[in-house]
Structures are given as C-alpha cells and as structure tokens.
Image (cartoon, each protein chain N blue to C red):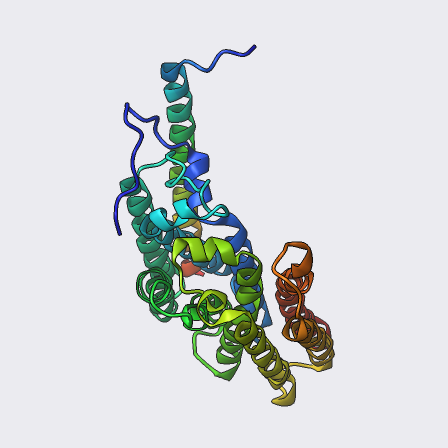
Amino acid sequence: MQLPPDPETERKRIQRGRNRALGLILVGLVVLFYLITIAKMR
Amino acid sequence: MSSVAAPATHPLPADWRDFFALTKPRVMSLVIFTALCGMLAAPVRVDPILGFVAILCIAIGAGGSAALNQWWEADLDAKMKRTANRPIPAGRMDRTSARDFGVALSAGSVLVMGVAVGWLCAAILAFSIFYYAVIYTVWLKPRTPQNIVIGGGAGAFPPMIGWIAATGEITLMPVLLFAIIFFWTPPHFWALALFVETDYAAAGVPMMPVVAGHHSTRRQILIYAVLLLPLTLLPFWLKLAGWLYGVSALVLSGLFLLLALRVAVFRGGATDMDMRPEKRLFGYSVLYLFVLFAALVADRFLIG
C-alpha cells in the first residue's frame, strides 16, 4: 500500500512547479517584447 | 455570487496545472484556430512576429475571460457533474487567485495587443473579454434562455480580431466570419444542452431545453441550421471567397442541416441511448467549424 504524500513535501513540489512556470513566463515575456521591438523597427 | 467553502486546514497552493485548466485549453484551441484562420484568410501579408503576437494575445485574452467566468460561476460549477472537478469547486484553488489570474491575463493581453498590433484590435479584444465575462457570464446566463444566442457573440470575436489584426480595418468579411460563429453557436450548444439537460436543471441555469422544453429547442436548432446555410455561402456569393470555399460551405452546411433536421424530428425518450442524434450533431458541429474555416484558408492560398 502506498502512503499519502507528506503535506510539506507536496507543498514544496507545487511551489517549485509554480516558480518554474512563472520563470518561464517571465523569460517568454522578455523574448516577446524583444521580438515585438525588432518587428516594429523594420 | 456566494463563496465556495475552502478547505479548513491550510490548503495546499494551487498547482500550475490548475491555473492552466482555468483557461479552458480545449475552448482555447478552437479560439486559436478560428483567429488564425481569420488572419490567414485576410488578403494581406502579415508580419509573422506580429501575427504570432496577435494570436497569442487573443488566446491569452480568451484564457483570462475563461478564468473570470470560473471565478464567478464556482458555485454553479460545483452543482454540475461536468464542471464539478474544475479547480475552484474541487477545492484545489481559492477564488481570489482565479480572479487575479483572470484579470492579469485579460489586462496583459489587451495591453500587449495594443502596443504590438494596434489599439483597434486591442479595443475589440477588450470588448470581447467584457462580453464573455460580464455580459454573458454575469448578466445573461443566469437570467434568460437566450443566453447562448447573445453569448455566442463572445466566441465569434476571434476570427474577426484575427482579420482586423492583419488588415487594420473592419470590413464586411470579418463581420461575416463573426456572424457565422454567432449563428453556429446556438445549435452547437443546445445540442449539448439537450443531453446534459438534467445537469443544467439541477444548477438552475435557464438553458433553452429547461425553460422552453425539448420540442421548442429542437425547432430552434433547425431554424439556426437553416439560417447558417445561406450565411456560410455569402462570402462566395459576394466574391469574397472562391469556389473551394463555396463548395465546402455548401457540403458542410448541408450536412449540418441534415443532422439538425434529424434532431428536430426526433421523438425519442430522454435516455442516453436515445440522445444519439443530439450527440451526433454536437460532435459534427465542432468538426464543421474546423473544416469550414480551414476551407476558407485553403481557398485563399490555393485559389487566391
């Protein structure tokens, strides 16, 4: 039988996932604004 | 709006997957597709970067309005089997997070659209978000069985915005694209409402089958299907699209009408087995829209 995950471990796992997603979004925004700037300058 | 009970002891933070689910990714795929078709069907070459940004903004705006819809309707969602497992009613996310997420996505998408593509597109995107989140969700849905008819306008904006993002102006063709989705929505959604009627009745949503009954709903499905046929042929008749689109529209809308007719004359019971014509029409209606818009783009690129 599998034990339920420890709440603290689970919280850290979720937080890590959210931080990664937020990091990706921020990097995506930087790239997006860079590309918009390049496209507007053409 | 009243509050959904939050878990009592220190709930876990919502997973990123729950935020993603809040954007209704399946609906978003149809939004992206129709917006892309609207943009590609326009007789103007679009800068690929700005085109990508426009589609991204339309998708994110749709995601934002979906999040706001789920924030507002959490109590309603909890009462229906189909929606009970959404992040808020399932207790995986608090309402405030959903609201803030929806506002951030909506505002962000409108701002980026304005800066990158143009403020006309941004204004229409902002209005489409307001239309879905406020006019449909808050005002119409709980009040009138015509909620789907007028609310269908919200889903009709993406191809219009896609076209305007490419051309920079509102002409007849984007209005026709808007009208096609507007008239497609009632038969599409009412076919679904006929076989999940018990869910809507339990939640107290005045869906057409709940308020007007099966017979009236089936008749109205047929009326919209009849109207859809000449409407989808208008771009061809007005020489705004070529024969490839015209033939596709005739075949696709003819089949749509045939399936709607089977729903209209159907006199079966209310069991799952008996709802086959409704399920068939609902399934076909999704395919119909994909193929019709794909034909419009294919016509533009192959026939010119």
